[in-house]
Image (tube, rainbow, N blue to C red):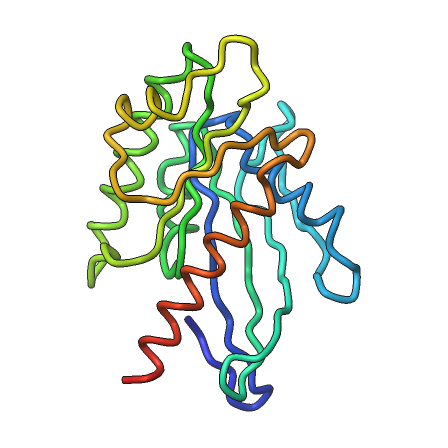
Length: 196
């Protein structure tokens, strides 16, 4: 959370985290396409020659006021590939909330698990540790014929007591439910902090 008192802005950073090709960038592309241009910035996407997100996507959304501050939601994705681990950690630093995007394909369960564990290791490695930030989980690619169920994915990833959102990001299904869920949780937490 960053407050720009001059412009009366409250900047909130939400990071989409998950394994390579799980649908993080697709989520942001769907949000970008459906949000009115005067309520968002340009979508910045840096890609490798393989057309995968290399560093981050950035999208700024404006919402109604919190107190007398205008919140701006900054959306980022981390690169999914393991060899960009340092970039993932850098993008995650300072996040106010995280959307973990899991791939529902049975052959991606190990990649999901590795990414989930790496995310938690990063969050606890910061000083101070970022262990109390809101996290929601999106089970993407639920349209696959062999997609794992919510129950199976929760058990395999050991996910307990976190909001879960099934989705098919390529069609936009579940994308805004996920965004609303994390935004609501982040704003609730910020209001608690500001009320102290």
